[in-house]
Length: 440
Image (cartoon, rainbow, N blue to C red; front, side):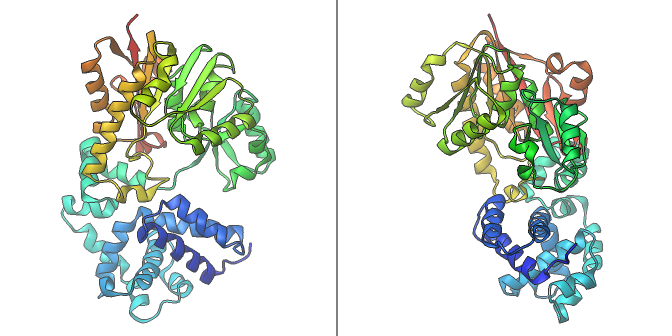
């Protein structure tokens, strides 16, 4: 394998990282933008850039604390120099040798000495009282560290640690075109080490680091990339081949899963407020051989939004509301999201979630089901939203997820009657799901 051209990797890493932390861009977009302009980088170098930027974003607060102790005057250094030190410290935190990293990063003098002083700074962090240490070691803003404690109690440190690991690359087999066993064989023939996921019966872990979109099996529509937790949320819908609504369809990951559950029969309505995402869904549906999806771009709110839903009122057997949320369950994949969430943003998410549930519940026919889900770990966006809805809608009741997933799987992935997933317990992203049944 060719050695990395460290100067080029560092330059690209600084550009992408700077866009995220100093310009407020989303990490995946910043990396995509940077790497598209760096056509001369080898694939191994591109991967190194992405991994180093994500690794630093996950450990940002920890790295800054360590450097403030290991490098006198760190806060006064010029921004680019700080960022070079951050990227270097993050690499050491992830197991690389200080001397080699200093050489790769062209660090000398006090900057190189700072890398050697990191173990001492880590000891200082470890000696802090638990309530001070946790937010720094978990690399969470104080507000979120408190929320993790509320959600996970004594497990908060383990949960935060798991959120700071790299997420596995997970696929969902397209059951309209193949089986999981056949897909595993096909992927192995394409040189990809893979294995079945332990919880979802249609999931596959891709263990070889590969650009999945370049695989022939992907181009043939044999699989989609979808976290195992998201697959389990889709399973709660248990979509019959009649009339099903995916109310916040986005680019359609779960829509396509529902189409397979329905065996391409019946009417599957995919609604979203974003034309671009709906276009992407249409493309994916064509590749996956999905024929029963009807896509519709709907206004975000107001009388015209309600009007757009009139034809579906009281008609759907299943309505899935996979609501936009804080994304606190997806920090393994979107590590920069933690720096964007504060009390006001959280309150806005909750208000929107309540409004969406209210709005789309009108589509559920008597005896039908409303499935509410988020990729959040926070009670405010999950159980509290469901409780608020039920208090105002006595004609809806909770169906325990174990009745849908079966006692064995259900017991592993539920807390009370709800789906509750977290990386440290299930190896998935953090997800919540509730099944609400409308009385006949």
